[in-house]
Length: 111
View 1 (cartoon, rainbow, N blue to C red):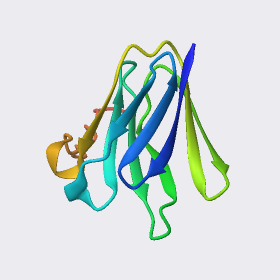
View 2: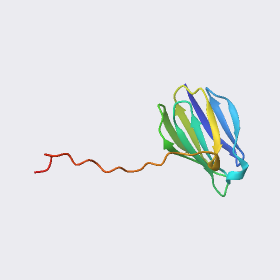
View 3: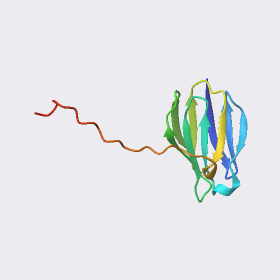
View 4: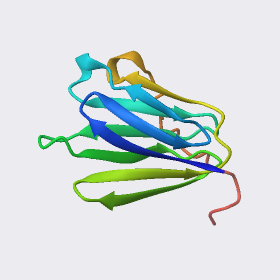
Protein backbone atom coordinates (compact mmCIF):
# COMPACT_ATOMS: atom_id res chain seq x y z
CA UNK A 1 0.00 0.00 0.00
CA UNK A 2 1.48 3.31 -1.06
CA UNK A 3 1.12 6.45 -3.12
CA UNK A 4 3.41 8.12 -5.62
CA UNK A 5 3.29 11.82 -6.43
CA UNK A 6 4.92 13.66 -9.29
CA UNK A 7 4.61 17.19 -10.56
CA UNK A 8 2.67 17.55 -13.81
CA UNK A 9 3.40 21.22 -14.34
CA UNK A 10 3.39 24.30 -12.12
CA UNK A 11 -0.34 23.90 -11.56
CA UNK A 12 -0.88 20.20 -10.82
CA UNK A 13 0.42 17.23 -8.85
CA UNK A 14 -0.41 13.69 -9.99
CA UNK A 15 -1.22 11.22 -7.17
CA UNK A 16 -1.16 7.49 -7.97
CA UNK A 17 -1.69 4.39 -5.83
CA UNK A 18 -4.08 4.09 -2.88
CA UNK A 19 -5.36 7.54 -3.82
CA UNK A 20 -5.77 8.49 -7.49
CA UNK A 21 -6.10 12.22 -8.14
CA UNK A 22 -4.74 15.34 -9.77
CA UNK A 23 -4.33 18.01 -7.12
CA UNK A 24 -4.16 21.70 -7.97
CA UNK A 25 -1.18 23.72 -6.76
CA UNK A 26 -2.59 27.00 -5.41
CA UNK A 27 -1.93 29.64 -8.07
CA UNK A 28 -1.04 32.44 -5.66
CA UNK A 29 1.95 30.63 -4.12
CA UNK A 30 4.58 30.79 -6.89
CA UNK A 31 4.61 27.00 -7.27
CA UNK A 32 5.08 26.22 -3.58
CA UNK A 33 2.67 24.21 -1.43
CA UNK A 34 2.31 21.78 1.46
CA UNK A 35 1.16 18.17 1.09
CA UNK A 36 -0.40 16.58 4.14
CA UNK A 37 -1.09 12.83 4.39
CA UNK A 38 -3.37 10.73 6.60
CA UNK A 39 -0.35 9.08 8.27
CA UNK A 40 0.92 12.42 9.60
CA UNK A 41 3.56 13.07 6.93
CA UNK A 42 4.03 16.70 5.86
CA UNK A 43 5.87 17.47 2.62
CA UNK A 44 6.89 20.79 1.12
CA UNK A 45 6.65 20.85 -2.68
CA UNK A 46 8.22 23.58 -4.80
CA UNK A 47 8.55 24.13 -8.52
CA UNK A 48 11.80 25.61 -9.80
CA UNK A 49 12.37 28.02 -12.66
CA UNK A 50 12.39 25.18 -15.20
CA UNK A 51 9.09 23.71 -13.90
CA UNK A 52 10.99 20.96 -12.10
CA UNK A 53 9.21 19.79 -8.94
CA UNK A 54 11.15 19.22 -5.72
CA UNK A 55 9.88 17.57 -2.53
CA UNK A 56 11.27 17.99 0.98
CA UNK A 57 10.11 16.10 4.07
CA UNK A 58 9.05 18.61 6.70
CA UNK A 59 7.53 16.17 9.23
CA UNK A 60 7.81 12.40 9.20
CA UNK A 61 4.62 10.44 9.73
CA UNK A 62 4.09 6.70 10.17
CA UNK A 63 4.98 5.83 6.58
CA UNK A 64 8.32 5.55 4.85
CA UNK A 65 9.01 8.43 2.45
CA UNK A 66 11.28 8.01 -0.55
CA UNK A 67 12.14 10.86 -2.86
CA UNK A 68 13.84 9.91 -6.10
CA UNK A 69 14.99 12.04 -8.98
CA UNK A 70 13.37 11.14 -12.30
CA UNK A 71 14.49 13.34 -15.17
CA UNK A 72 14.27 16.95 -14.06
CA UNK A 73 11.78 16.41 -11.23
CA UNK A 74 11.36 14.46 -8.01
CA UNK A 75 8.97 11.56 -7.52
CA UNK A 76 7.71 11.09 -3.99
CA UNK A 77 6.68 7.64 -2.75
CA UNK A 78 4.99 7.16 0.60
CA UNK A 79 4.87 3.51 1.68
CA UNK A 80 1.91 3.25 4.02
CA UNK A 81 -1.85 2.91 3.75
CA UNK A 82 -2.84 6.40 2.63
CA UNK A 83 -6.49 7.30 3.11
CA UNK A 84 -6.26 10.95 2.07
CA UNK A 85 -3.88 13.64 0.89
CA UNK A 86 -4.45 17.39 0.87
CA UNK A 87 -2.69 20.37 -0.68
CA UNK A 88 -2.48 23.79 0.95
CA UNK A 89 -0.81 26.95 -0.21
CA UNK A 90 2.07 28.23 1.86
CA UNK A 91 -0.04 31.12 3.07
CA UNK A 92 -2.95 28.81 3.97
CA UNK A 93 -1.07 26.62 6.43
CA UNK A 94 0.45 27.19 9.84
CA UNK A 95 2.88 25.19 11.95
CA UNK A 96 3.76 25.41 15.59
CA UNK A 97 7.13 26.96 16.21
CA UNK A 98 9.47 24.86 18.25
CA UNK A 99 10.84 26.84 21.11
CA UNK A 100 13.85 25.42 22.82
CA UNK A 101 13.32 25.18 26.53
CA UNK A 102 16.33 25.07 28.79
CA UNK A 103 17.10 21.72 30.32
CA UNK A 104 16.54 21.66 34.07
CA UNK A 105 19.56 21.45 36.27
CA UNK A 106 19.08 18.48 38.55
CA UNK A 107 20.75 18.61 41.95
CA UNK A 108 23.47 16.09 42.54
CA UNK A 109 24.36 15.41 38.91
CA UNK A 110 27.41 17.64 38.85
CA UNK A 111 29.89 17.29 41.62
